[in-house]
Amino acid sequence: MAVLGPGFAHGPGTCELAKASSNSVHVATIFGSEGSDRLVPAISTVLVVRDAGGWVAHGATEAVADIDLTETPEMSAGVEVTAVSEAVFGAARFAWVQTVVTEADVAADERYIDETTTLMVCELGEPVRCGQVDLAAWQYVVARTDDDEDEDDAMGGGCRSAEGVSLQVEQRDAGGLTVSGAAGSDGAAPRLVPFRRE
Image 1 (tube, helix red, strand yellow):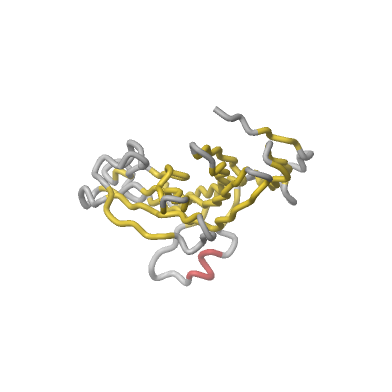
Image 2 (cartoon, one colour):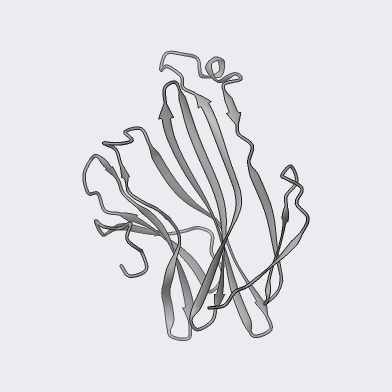
């Protein structure tokens, strides 16, 4: 419970390991327990690292709080772990965890879908230190369809995307990351983001 944070007021319900993993790093997706039928339970991803003593949970890499369906009756959310990898630079070892968080809600005749891709970079020392980089953020607006409509006809031209941001990140040494704008993004020049160790 200590690594899950305050979003799990009802306690953890189920747990599953993400398919993406590396030799000594896994990510567990924790789903909150069902508090009521008007509550979508919280979701959290937890970094699990193998060291000399075995597997240890080190903290949440992504979290989505409970959704109160009495306030937002058509809202939904999900978290997907898309990539897990490791890198070694000298004596320093790092884990990279990439996740996609999707949140959807309905207003009038449109469904708003917010999608955010984040990269968690963790230095696997003692203690484990982690920092997050937002890689991409997009909003899609989709026209809702009636059950009896032909979906292809209803969706033709019915989806639009707000302007988003997309970044590429590379780690070349143990001191920091190089971040640049991805193709089709804002064309930002590469910049070095140093690690701040606390």
